Image 1 (cartoon, rainbow, N blue to C red):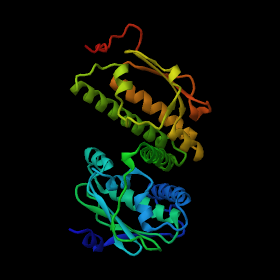
Image 2 (image 1 turned 90 degrees about the vertical axis):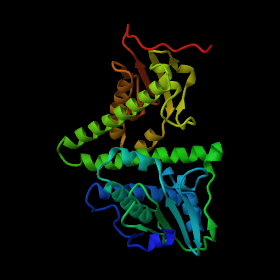
Image 3 (image 1 turned 135 degrees about the horizontal axis):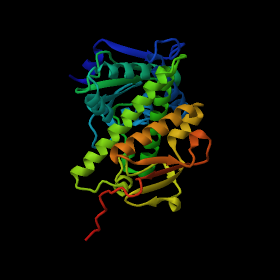
Image 4 (image 1 turned 120 degrees about the horizontal axis):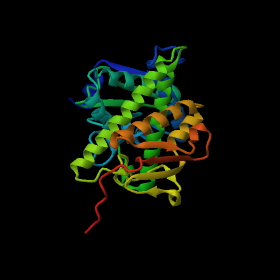
Length: 333
């Protein structure tokens, strides 16, 4: 099915409307609020004369932008006038959803609410449209942007991953998005006098940490690498280019111990902006303990200070109990 026919199917049309993100049932309302946050931030970054092409090619996050990058599935096109389209064929979050969700309607809820909120926050008479029966996480799904001004014709292009500076900027924004999404959803689940919401968020965060720890360990086992702290630090499950900042002269790394002093964290930056350090601390504690103990059972996870509790830095201390035996790092021949 070509993109034009795909979009002519019954679809959702998002534009600036009063109250987006307010009054909708949770968590839809909080997803719209998250989208509004993204739209407001992006509107401040683009110049006044920006077109639909600029919105698509500089989309703030990897969720849509990766489709425009060389070597990634998907693509984008400018049919002409004030229209630009991004077509997703697959995406990292699609693969995660396929692995973890039995009801894939959550993907539809997420995109519909987030894009509605984004249009409301961005303003500038933007209209965002997409078919209302997807994505099904396995076939082409297209998002159309319409704005005043001629976006030209031809393919959309983004080459952010080919250069360190734009790649870092995209990675930074994607991490900021994650922290904001976690915050908006946590607030929705935790609303009300009962502690059941907080328990659910803590449990879900721990499950996320366990999943990442177990996957990382399984990959290292498959690659024949020793399961110890040195392997975790040198072959972690995040991009090789990091947007986190550290005092490397304070790092201590052995097979059984890792001390890190983090001076900049994009998550902590967002939690501070959203007055959500309480939620950030909950994530810091539950995630790090769960991930590292899933990788190395018995791991002791401590901190000498974290940003979300008011410290200038996060000082995490990971270590195995005294006398614990781990696989030693093999010396290169």
